[in-house]
Image (cartoon, rainbow, N blue to C red):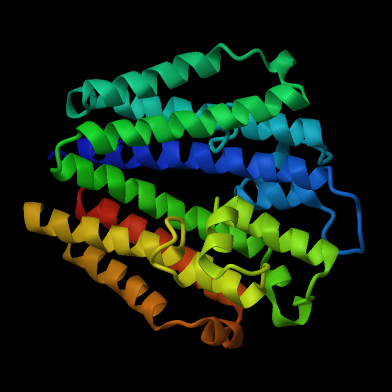
Length: 314
């Protein structure tokens, strides 16, 4: 497979995954902004949303103040923001179009229809009720695209590069989301039954679509050490760092078998995986959660760069 084709499949899936994640962040930010201000220390909700999306610097370069309306439009519709939902869908579709023959009909139709339907949205209609509807629709379309890929794409190099993009991006998203709220997960903030603190713990789980599965898995109230365990280390949770790392290793292993290259990328991925497998909530607490997540983000970015070099993304 040509490096340009591999790169397009990789980034197509990364951007569709990012569109879904940004939709979740906006939804969480919107719900947070409606929460009464109980206590102090957690009220800069929209700034935290921009930080989690990795867009705070770009936003401040364009806007003097952080307001709900401007943040929502920046993250939803602004073409100058490469991580807005509009930009993500458009970039994913452009990458898919450039390798149209490598996609199945179902994948292309899901991708192209999502692009066309999103462009039909009237920005002036995005009031509170319409906002949540658009966010739900975005997640549904991302899932439709992913389902089309899983249900119709041959398990060859194209599938591996698509899945690799998905889980590199998902791991990055989870780490960024948790990093913005890491102080809530510190032992000093563990407050049994505390209203605002428990709401913040629930928010962290909602950011990674894990609040329902967490309650099913642990069967008791939100507790910081268990949340760290669940969204960082648990291989069963489909957005945990461990789950994403396992998939990245699996896809790179298959790619090295198919192509004979990528040994450096695979070694880097296995190093990340080994670190996660050796970690416990206690060891992460001793190291420092924020430092642990920052290190993961750095290693994940280096892995993506190494993958691009190994497979000649160009």
